[in-house]
Length: 579
Image (cartoon, rainbow, N blue to C red; front, side):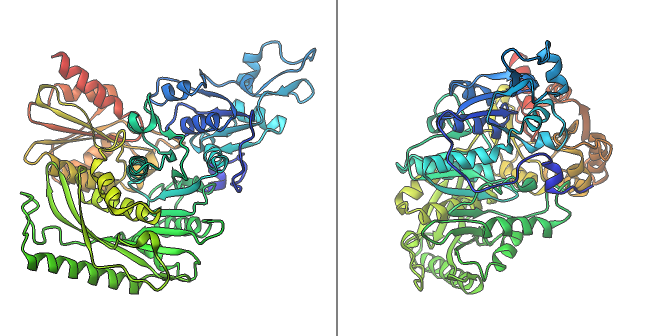
């Protein structure tokens, strides 16, 4: 079943141009224990709003930062968060009961807030939520929390930078934010994962409020979530079919990304898009932008990963002939890319890279095209110099992310030495190949991967970091419809990429139909593809306990998913530490 964005966001005001948040504006954030809504609450408070917040439960890693910003997150939902009886009025004598029903009377109730910010995960499954109903009855605007983040950026007067794509948004956004911070630009930001505390400030947060010229946001394509963001600089990492509940096919996904690009705004200048043309879907979007007035920075990672070097040992061929060959090959690839992609502004600028070495400690990149990008003038051609960058994150997908970060940073005028330093210093964001512990010699990693492509890339990265070790793929599927639509691909990547597989119960999220797939069905599909050691132990707690009885020293356990899968990693580490 595919639903329209309007149906998913039923009752929400449409996206609008961002406007400054007025001092003292009363904003109530519903679902503030989530990664995104928590950032909206923090950024609105920092922008001068009077913020209130609530969520069904508050046992979330994001709540501490909200409360550190001076916003208490109330547990539970109630219309009384939105409206109260007028003085002397005849409002309900039991506000809690009225709150559960959501029924209010305009004649006897007064609004407590100026607007509500909510997530579409709520409107998708509960459009008659009591706080939403109360707001509608009183004429209080109800907007997606992304609109509040966009308004905070305008309040800051900062240049908006948006990072979009089916995969890798959080890592790439966090990487760019940290690089700008290390370069002294003091950016503001929203990232869909916890930033390191030295970047966000303790406690760890998905938001950052800075004084610099950039405001960087992770821009999610689901049901028009990124529509409020109209960045001056956009980054498109990839475009692949996902969210089958709102996108019928990959063409619909590409159409959404193209629409977002065409809505980009750079007052007084042309917007710029950095696009990973090494991804088929993103390159197809770029190919359609020949009439777009913005500037295009085309990025690609060449396929010759072994090249002159041995990725298994990290040894490099340092001969002059090899270096000349690398410069020539990158320059030739850049020329080909420039001739293939252009906009109404002119030919694309090209940033091209190759993996020179890969080992358990990270990846060495050779990059051409960074020099001169910040001062790019129409008709200029990238120079022939090649930079070497060492990144700590394993995997080809992270090498692609690094190229996009480098190209975006250069476009923003960051000097090449600072870019190379920033690429090398980054160690990741929360729940992105995060090592949660290594008790009894078992490495337990936590990752947000929840799509077959992301799972395959993450498994490959773990193989690079932990060569020769038995690898457990532990997956909590995110939504029933995604699992059903992509079941064969999930089964293929799990069966081919792991030694052992455990599938926890599916996390429904915003999915109203829980009948179309099951954890055991996915485990059976993995077994049918030749990996007999695939099981569906049950809940996240049962899965962690099942693993604790079976892992042995030397194993690597990769826990993946977007719901409560992080509890598997935490519980497994705690269990192994006790025994």
